[in-house]
Length: 424
Ligand code: MEV
Image 1: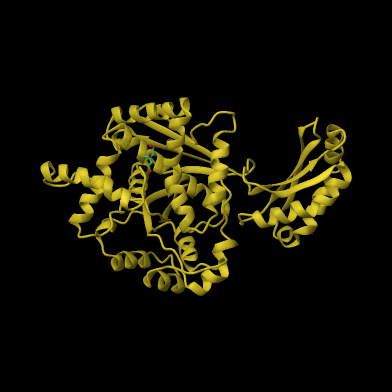
Image 2: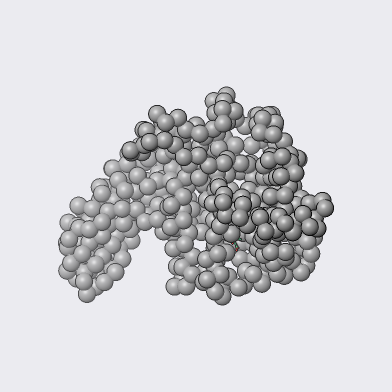
């Protein structure tokens, strides 16, 4: 998005779908094809779906909304989200608005280095074999590069190698090849490398060849984001302290950390789905990383600083702006145009920021009025607007005439959430 375009679009939630599209069109982010796609209601032609996977009988749709107010590394970003759970988009937008007041999110992503694994069993003297493999590093990296010449021509390729003895007794040894994959998610490239180097690995180490596949625990492809938010923006120092206490709870308790991370992934996954990313890979990597120290921990933390909070998140994030669904799915292409990330690394920083926003919104609600009241307020406002979406991230003012009518809604809203397939 160009510098002068803002991700704050006042009253977006109050407009009808057509008006929202006009507002987006006016930003000049979308090409003709993307605009036509969204104006037609989005979706996926069954003929395209039939080419994407097997045994297709129809397509399966989700609501596509926009999270507003995001500012990431000094750039305003509109975040498309595909999600069935009510209030995820509004919550992320609201939290982004609070963070925006203190400058927005900042972050950085590692170079896009994926991990290929080659497994060997029954290796005689596995430690000595590991040393031989490390000594043969140059020829193994060259063998890997030879299998992905186009990626090498684009500046990617095999960068490093590691031989890990998993069991000296059983002779189980695994070789990691670290492959830079440019702006792709990179799974296919890495699998190609793993299969290409495997015969040489076996010749050097001996033993029986096993799996040749990427690892989704992409520890050399981490993203780190941070945000500060002022007490005022949160609704006071008590709320801020409550959020810090909630964060500590998650650090101390894996049961709470799991739900904390679910809230973090709510926004990240929704954006990942809209952007055609492999959300299963993202989820697998995130939770494995959360447990990497031997105990499951929160992916993000919030710490008290004078006058506010600082939030930090770190996780592996293998995402791409090229390849996969980005090549064939018109909705994904439109979503990528909206985000405007120039690289996979930039996209990773945006997605992690969305995670941190979702997490902040959840903790703020939990540390103040509880989660259900906000859901009900959205539900109420949606009814008041005659069914228009409430994803605008505007201040969640209590509905007028709260009293009895709201009490009645209170009984109804969790049901509505449940019916929509959303867990809380
Ligand atoms: C609901 O989808 C997500 C939350 O449970 C997250 C959390 O508890 O932090 C509200």
